[in-house]
Image (cartoon, rainbow, N blue to C red; front, side, top):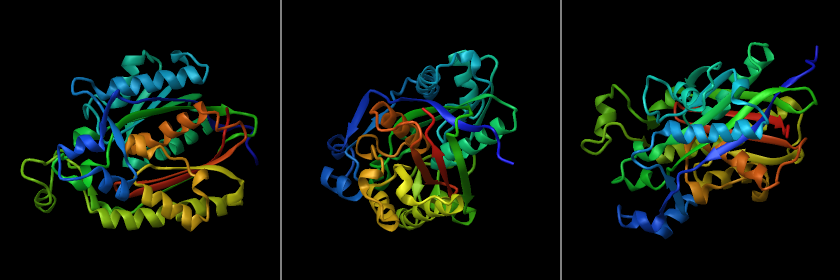
Length: 331
């Protein structure tokens, strides 16, 4: 039996720090060059959160923008799902801090961690909760302060990451638009190739890091690159096949913004032109789970998206995790 309604994205918002860290700035910090970074990553600059600003503030700005875009009041939000690997605190959660800052007193709130795939995991959770009738308006806030988890003496990782927040309101839609399918996956056996320790660290993982740099990103770049290049296209093709959708029907692919070479590899494998693969990577760097909602909001504000457009969102991240969603744009 076909449901009379679906869950759809009815509002988006974003917030980026004002401070820009360019490749030229990084040349003064670490042994690198603008040419080296652009050639290997496609990144020109990234945004950096001020030291005295909590991530929850940036997340709350994005959240308010998304609620406004959805035409709702804060009091209409009955659940907040926050995704992050760089929370201000483990407790209270980022979601609870956002609830406090925006005044969403009626909303339940919890954090979800699937690293860079976090937004798609949250989308799956929000869809299920709306379809079940448990909630009406779910706010997803994906926010990251990756600069606080980076070793700025490690040129392999510090050039990649930036800070930012993106948000989306997920609500019931009854016009045929909305989320068509979300697929999630994980490969825990490969978890050690991308790590950010918290309250415990193995001796092996500690030995990979510079002295005194316990709670920072460490990555086996070649292993992550191989995995990402394969899984981005595989996850996209699988969801298209399962929904009987031809790739020619997709207006835009919104991939996680990790590395331009990964996006180019995905385009090649999918036989999809780069002008149908949205990217803001050059100006933001990798902002982990925030990258896809930030991109969606940018594209919408540029009038690139129209109601009824078919989109694919696809991501990979630490864990390792991956996910893809096919949706019909609801705004």
